[in-house]
Length: 347
Image (cartoon, rainbow, N blue to C red; front, side, top):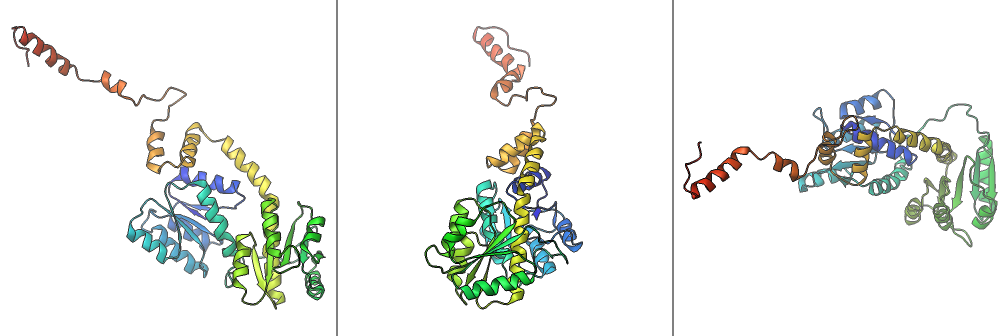
């Protein structure tokens, strides 16, 4: 969810995030954001909010109300140009990530990629989507990689009982040999495997730009491995021994993300079409945003945008020199005449 009162910045953030494969909803102020959630229009995984918002609620006050409304601690990125100690401490107290304005696209993208997996794997969070009854699983597949044949057989039985298609492998190497990208799928992989480990497999897939949602299987209390798995791109992790309900919820989330990834190309094309349809003024603002200029700079420049293709007004000193008052020239001439003994210049 984007909460930003500047419509140009809001639209550009929306386009840029959709280009990264994100689904977005935007609100111009805190009241509108709260209304969207109250009416069930969105259940955000992450909030991107301006610190200074209109209508009496700042970004942190809106975040506090949204978290209470959704009954979970949603990750939040706060954009602000105010870097005073009191503001930074206030943002930290609300457990939000702070990015300085003007924010750079790479910095924003990295923060979103870091926070989204943590949001979706929160133990007490409601699921980010509700699967429909009798949903069609045709074409979807779940890859299981575990060197323990008993665990592989148990996972297969559990998942096939839900009508899922399952392909299992004893090693990461065997999986990579058989894997072909492009299918709606997810990966269940054990952290500790002979040869290539589960963590190394996730890193390999990430470096190869394969967007296969993965669930890491870890031992009970193995927090460091779970953290490293998240950094490597895992969507979720489950601890042994795991319950069927927890496994099903994780797989549902992973397959939903896989469906989203299959739509990513269409979203990218739509975003490209949106960008192609921007007016010259909107393109100028987009260039300034991407270059990291502050908002007051692109507002100032937008006021000087040429109309109907005419050249913009000159902003250099040449124009000012042409506007020097003629009285100054008269005074200078007057002084020259006085030095020659002529009559004084009239006032």
